[in-house]
Image 1 (spheres, rainbow, N blue to C red):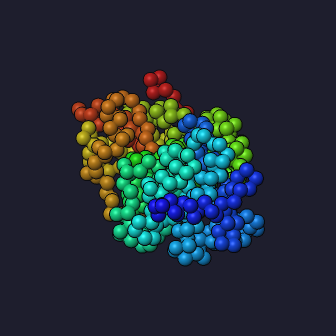
Image 2 (cartoon, rainbow, N blue to C red; image 1 turned 90 degrees about the vertical axis):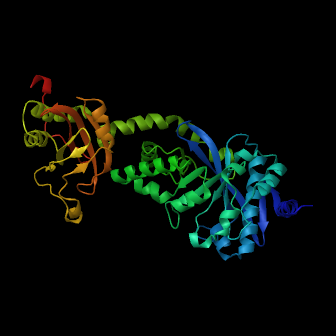
Image 3 (tube, one colour; image 1 turned 135 degrees about the vertical axis):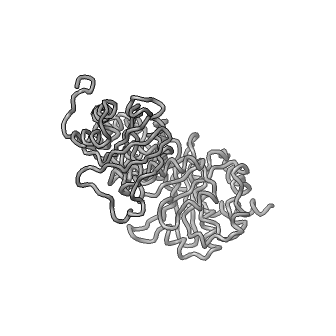
Length: 428
């Protein structure tokens, strides 16, 4: 009998049938499985379940799985880790769940060769007749210093495994992008703390959206865990998160179908709720951009009529809360200083960036889009402003004046307020 088979046989001896499912006895502790649904926002349905370890009879605040692992020696923790995966697969397959991924937690391996290898997963999947491609191994957060360099050699290459790998707790504790580069996960799970922060402010929403974009470019799907409120879900949908799980969709339960009972109906309402959220959102990208267009066109008409950039800026400031106005040539070069709105000045901490003459904005998307469609106003953001170190939106329009093509730009705060609806420039 191979080592893998012997290990599996030992694990199976810990399992005890109970109420159509299984429990596992580890030393003096009785363990059971609980499952929580994972939903795809795009597909509006449950696409997987995370398996969670529970201590039978544990009181709130009492001894839980985390305490068991904390007290265990490295060898005992590895045994408990393997037993938990065996228990979860036994319970999941016993309930006849024939679709969706099964997320199985795995401790970060402290020694080379301890990664749950393809062979180890093969043994479990073969015994329980479970497809490899439905297994997602979740790697829990751990200090980088606790993973020796030889761990990288023990880690299977992305193309050499049939199961998926998820990186858990991203954005908390010791979790960072270094883990993304090393593990090359199929899924990155955003920690609950990031979800809470994103729901508490507009700038945080932008941060999460940018983070999701980076993780997508790293080749991973993004799963947000700990979703407890509708507002948190709406923010995550705005940020283009792929997968979600949390109490809002269902509490963990030993019976898979009980855990996901409420999820299908909620999933079918997500997009209707999101449409309502966007209509009532105070983000600039949800307001009527026609008013911003009118303001920018008024400024553009001043310039094409022979006026100065100062006069154009005064017109824009008169009708909006624009922060500053500036112009660049068709190469993106800004030679004249930006014109700040009354009461708006450069922060002292950014003094080395001033004066802002001889700047080049050709890399900015608003500049490229404006130049590609002369005479049309484009608005982009939010993005980081090098003028004041905060988020802003930038409106831009390409036009010809003074014998050359220029791009007139204006920065606006995220919460845009128009002083009055300006008349249509075509009728002015």
